[in-house]
Image (cartoon, rainbow, N blue to C red; front, side, top):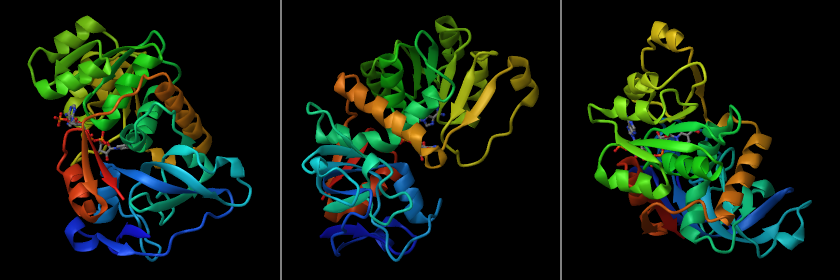
Length: 322
Ligand SMILES: NC(=O)c1ccc[n+]([C@@H]2O[C@H](COP(=O)([O-])OP(=O)(O)OC[C@H]3O[C@@H](n4cnc5c(N)ncnc54)[C@H](OP(=O)(O)O)[C@@H]3O)[C@@H](O)[C@H]2O)c1
């Protein structure tokens, strides 16, 4: 099969190549997916560059997310799954068989039936971002009737955080850096969209909700002042991203607010929690509550350019077609 592979860390142009390699067979408890689209996330270029290096077992096919059809199952998996159209998550976690290839294999639970009305692009966009958004929203309980602030509401995680929070009954405010992203956050359903660079950002968020229940945070250091302006004893600030340098915590101000800080990295979240997240995400897709961001599509041969586009923070989602 044709697959993107790398066997050492470095720039995309230096280490990522497309090669003909043997098609994998599913092991016990696994399914094989004929990949239609592979979704690219920041974690993919960070792993490949060595910034957040993961051990390479001979070679690595990158990317966790994708859409495709199950065409073989391993021992212990219902053969009735063959022919199912699925979306995948965490395919390359602890495995060399990511989705940037014509076929990928993964544990059966990480290939989830994709509702018929959902596009391949949406299916390939869900994995890492939607599951992260779900964990950030629900790690501290339901959000129905709660006030949620989503920082960076036009990012991939931010987008699904807005849509999932709305679907599960929250009031949602989002921050963005400019009009194009404001439009995306509004279309995702945010009740209020605020430009975090404008001087009245805190005031506008305070008039929406003086004390948020959740803050889904992409840049804790940059936004802590803004977050504390709408924080109190009920607030959980849930940070899912590391910035270029770690912030210094204003401990007294955090104490004054009685705020709770939580950190999320989906690769360390227990499996059953992630499976529940995948089930909830699928339910939201089925209900038509999750939508695509603008899509930039690359052929497999241009996988290096696809990863570079994600590293350069292209707006929307990048997908690769094998
Ligand atoms: N912990 C986990 O399990 C996990 C899972 C998924 C992703 N991540 C990490 O989370 C980050 C985002 O991932 P993604 O896929 O959502 O990336 P993305 O699609 O590029 O979105 C990032 C968004 O953050 C916004 N942003 C940057 N600085 C901001 C600030 N100070 N305030 C508000 N918004 C800000 C960006 O827009 P502007 O710059 O225009 O504001 C952009 O819209 C990456 O670092 C990724 O590695 C972690």
